[in-house]
Image (tube, rainbow, N blue to C red; front, top):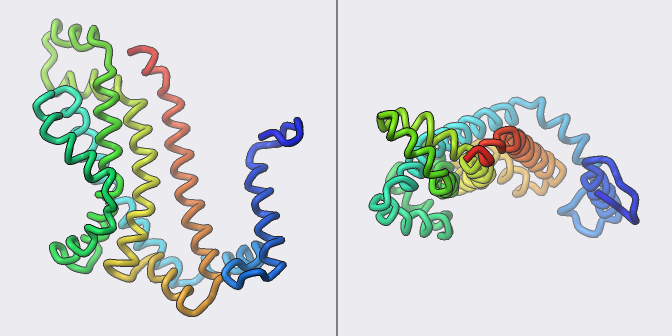
Length: 250
């Protein structure tokens, strides 16, 4: 980041926005935005409570389960769509529809089909994440150098060997990019599920603090959620950059 021609250290933008937040909160323009210092102080109080730890476990469980199913189902589906034209023509319109549709509208349907428990929250999280993973895996396979596929056929590679040794690794940069975006969407999915389906986890804390106008507590939990999403996204981004050389090898 550069400011007036001066190169600032990494994360400087977060520091600047933190200062702006603190000043805005000190001016007491809105009760909804307390000073950042008050939020940080409350954060250390909240994370040690039993309610927060229970909410963290419930949210992490639903999030990890949803992402797991999105990855396990989405990557093979995207790869098969990229290598099979008939399957691609059958599934691609539906993938595009669900990717662009407001998935929140499907939550009442999931509640009717699967109930008000954790199962519906996990399915909601999966639905938010899976479509972009499918599309990215498909795009990665469609960009594979045809010579790699011809080489696999000439050596008599089985379908599984071609999938696990050629398609997956050659499409890995796009796959990781899709997983990174899918993880970000899954964070939104798990919170929407916890707010609309079953008031548990961070969703329960958000509703509790908002209804009682405990804005410092509300923002403290929100900061934790943002930090978790940012950390996971950066880790996946790092892995994506590490395997970027596969794109050149294609």
